[in-house]
Image 1: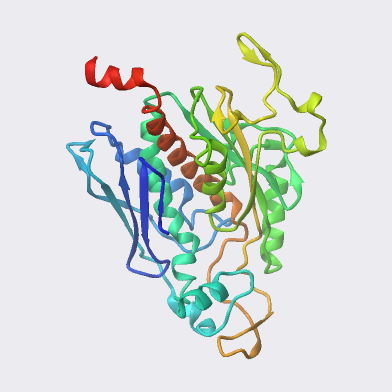
Image 2 (image 1 turned 90 degrees about the vertical axis):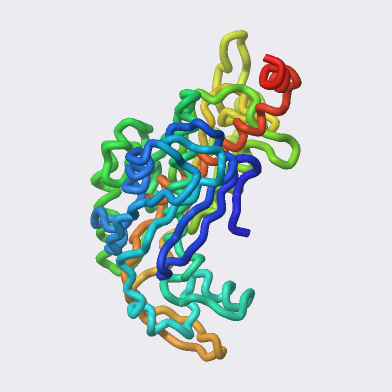
Length: 357
C-alpha cells in the first residue's frame, strides 16, 4: 500500500533512481493558504548533501506543485507535488544488481515481487521520505491555523543519551541535537564511525503541543496506534515509545497521571489516554537502527543462491536518525491533521454548526 490516512490522505510515488518522486494529497480543505516558501524550507531541513553527517548525494529537493492550488490557496481538489531526482549515480550499484545487501529490503522485495530495482533500493529507499515531508508541510499549514506545533530532535546516538531536551536549540543544530552539551560528542561519534566505514543508530524525540482533547478514533484508529504505524513506516525505524519510556519499570501508583481541575499532575501517558488525546503534550521517541549501507566487506547470497562476499559502493548516511527526525515530524503532522478532520464529525453539534449555523 502506498497511501496513508483517512480524510487527509496522501499517496507517494517514485523510486530512488527514477526520474522523480512525488505525492498526491487528498482531503485538504479549500481555502488553505499554501506557503510555498515554508514547504521548501521543510524540504531543505531533510534534504541530503547538506553536511558531513548525511549522505553526499546532493539533491536540491525542489518541490513543484502541479495541481490543487489556485492563486496561492488550496481548491479542495487533490494537491500533487513532484520532486525531480537530479543527482543519481546508478553505476554505483552495478556490482550488486544480483546481490542481496544485508539489512536491506533487497531479499524480501525480490521474493515478494520476483523483481527489484537494485539502484539504491528503488521504492524501498529512504529517498521516498522526501515526498512524505512535502505532505507533512501541507499538514503543518493546516495545524498552524490551530496553533498546534510539532517539534523533534535527537535524544540519543550510539547509546549516548541526552540529559537535556531543548527543542529550540535543536532547530539551530546541524544534527537536531536536543542536548547542547552532547552535540559535539554525538558529532564525533558519527564521524569516527563513518571513518571506520560503519554506521550508528539513534533515537528521535517528538513533541506535539497545543492539541485539543478528543483526537483519536477508538478502537482501531486510536491516536497512539496510528502514530505508531506512521513512525514504523519510516525507513530504518524499529520501535516507538509513547510517554514515559521507563513506564514498564514502574508501579501503577508511580505511573498514573493524577488529575486536578486545571491540569494533569504528570504526563507519563504521553498525552494519550484510551487512544484519545487528553490535552497534554503528545510525546514519544522513535528508535532508528544503524544505516544498513556500510562500506565493509559483508557475507551474503545472490539471487541464484550462491554465497558471496561483497563491498558496497555509493553515498550513504552514516546515521539515519538525524534526517529521520524531520520525517518523523512530517508523519506526525499528517496523523494529527487527519485526526482533526475526523474529529469534526463526532458530535452532532458540529454538524449543526456547519449546516444550520
